Amino acid sequence: MENYYEKLIRCRDAVRAKTDFQPRIGLILGSGLGPIAETMDVVAAIPYKDIPGFPVSTVPGHAGRYLFGYIGGVPVVCMQGRVHYYEGFDIHDVVLPTRVMGLLSIKTLFLTNAAGGLDPDMEIPSLMVIRDHMMFNFPNPLVGPNLDQLGTRFPDMSQVYDPALRQVLHDTAAKLGQKLSEGVYIQLTGPSFETPFEVRYYGSIGGGAVGMSTACEAVAARHMGLRVCGISCITNKGAGLSSQPLSHEEVNASGDLIAERFSALVTAAIPAIDKA
Ligand code: HPA
Image 1 (tube, rainbow, N blue to C red):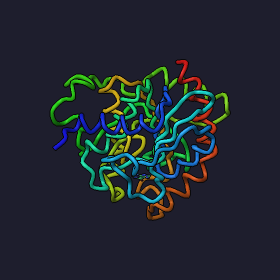
Image 2 (cartoon, helix red, strand yellow):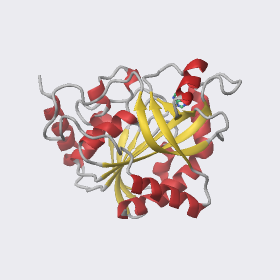
Image 3 (tube, rainbow, N blue to C red):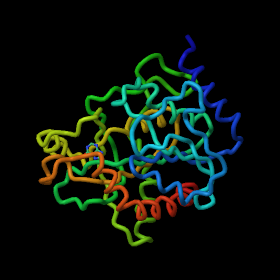
Image 4 (cartoon, rainbow, N blue to C red):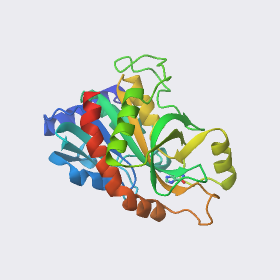
């Protein structure tokens, strides 16, 4: 059987066979946040299903393709749709699309997601810069033989989310007159939403938001030495913090409500991130 590193290279080469576009920033779009791609000047679109061996998402609302092009004049590769551990993928496949972007020589990874808010007073929907993360009962994507070609066995994670890039996001939001909070993102496996007790617990240990993606991609990216930043779109209050039951439909509808604000922020931030 082909080893994992060979698979990564084969996926990278399959992308390279379709476009020689050179992105500097990789942008991963979370549930319901795909429409930002409409603000992009697209040069090439590569459906994941056209890359042999590439994991393809089964989640409604996840388009499943790489888009290459320009946002604010900066060459970017955008992942419109990602795969999740809860879909049954091996954790190494969950981070494969991120690593392929690293092998395409991006310098910075910009992560986005939909998440549940842990602060009972948080506005819904709202946007949160990710300051740090915790993977709670979630497998580390670096488990297994170390890929020395990508990075070191024991990578430092003391500043996963680049402080200078976090500042750029806050400065950009201020210029646009947008509110932007900052907090810790907790990644869980899903796919069930949390119980009210779990939400109280994650809030009590200092979490700002809970979700089912992102942190593992950030770890894989830092392993490769990429700069990382991220924004959570807080689409709902965590279970028990509001009287309503949670649903994927509510998450998507709430994402739609904030999509324009989110697009404006990301589009304005990307040139500044590229320079930072
Ligand atoms: N919990 C976990 N993941 C989520 C949530 C939530 O409340 N909202 C959007 N993604």
